[in-house]
Amino acid sequence: MSGPIRPPLKISDVADGGSVTGRPINVIQVTDGTLTVSGTTATLDLSGSGGTPGGLTSEVQYNNAGSFAGDAGFFVVSAGGGDSTKVRIGGLNLQNNKISPRSGNDDVILKADGSGEIGLQSSAINGGTWTDSIVKIMCNTNADDAYLKFRSQYTSDDGGLMCDGNQDIILVSKVTNKDIDLQVNGTGQVEVQNTTTNNDTTFSVKGNGTGDSIINLNNASEAVSLICDTNKELKIQGGTDTFIFDVSSATGGITFPDSTVQTTAASGGGTFNVISPKDPVSGGYADYRYSISNAPPWGGTSTIGGENASEFDQPRAFPFIAPITGDVTEIGITVRTSSTDGDCLVGIYTDDSGICDELLGYATIDIDSTGDIYQTTTSATISLTAGTQYWYAIGFDAAMTSGQIDGLDEDEIPSLGLTYSPDSFKYYMRHDATTTSLPDPFSGDYTGTAKRILVSLKIS
Image 1 (cartoon, rainbow, N blue to C red):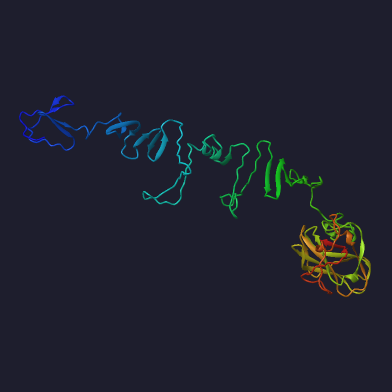
Image 2 (image 1 turned 45 degrees about the vertical axis):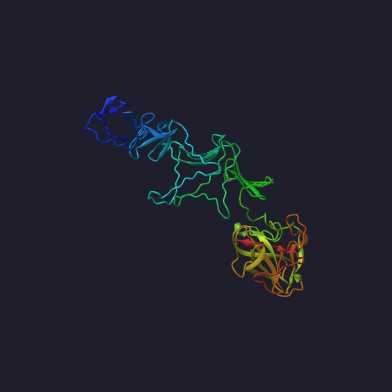
């Protein structure tokens, strides 16, 4: 607008229809707005600069095609000017580091797109110290459940990790006939540990109701099962056979696959003394003589044959299982034909992976007469442990030209229905080079044929 303003100058408020009063005006400046002149009338339009808020009170404003507008789904619920400020966007409320649904019992879902991942991560962007990252699943009270649920978009609950109202931690699968697998990589182990010092750790496998408790141990080619299907009985089950350990009473015992039941530990006496040397009239447990030559599992039948002492130019050894724990107090043999050439040496050896190994001690037995001969003196204390494999060896302290000691015939050596073959059953005997003493340790493979000499032990 140019040219002088001719008095009188009238200023009016178009919106309110009133007039504006004030001092005489000499200059009108337009900074933000539009000034138009029509004839002698100048119009100043300021609607594009300040504008009028759109929508209802509390609605956040946005640019709607050059004008202000509000959205009823995006508004300030309470303007606290800080942590107490509460904003509602769509179905969500945002307040004090919390996101909650607008309506009661509604879900809050965080979505990634495609193969994207949803990350929960601690940080140090506001000056904090970032070490651990902790995700908190929190319920209202200890009597309520805190539940991390797994599901698909088509199911409601496939299972998950729960801290229930008893404050027990439960890993649960809710899909019928589906597994829970614990997997480790490399040499890692699956561990169950009590973190309270000196407390026991109990691993419990529970059947539901009257359902059995079963532990399957298996890989691609091996399998065995531990089963509890009767109160206080444990079954060890293979492919077809089952051992039952009944601990319901002192007489429960062990049931073997052939249905026989053992209620006490195997002991000496008649069970082991099935061949000469004979069991004496015994006055106590320590007086039993154990025939280790044909006792399980290496023994044979009651067939007796004589082994010529002249064939024992090399010591020979045979395995046996110790029937009880204790010290050897006597070693006995049966002499069929006497000899004055030399004395018989009977030694007891340790076992090293099925091989006759170190000499524990030996007895020197005079075979000048026939019959059952027992020697109570040994070169050293010989201590045995029940159920452990040892070896006994036979040798002589001189070159033998005569004499005969009872033993099992060659074809009676195996106790498992096997046919004797020296090359297949080398573990029945070992030898050293020609010698008149018992070697320590034993060495060499024996590949000839010889009877298993009958030997008895007293152990106390």
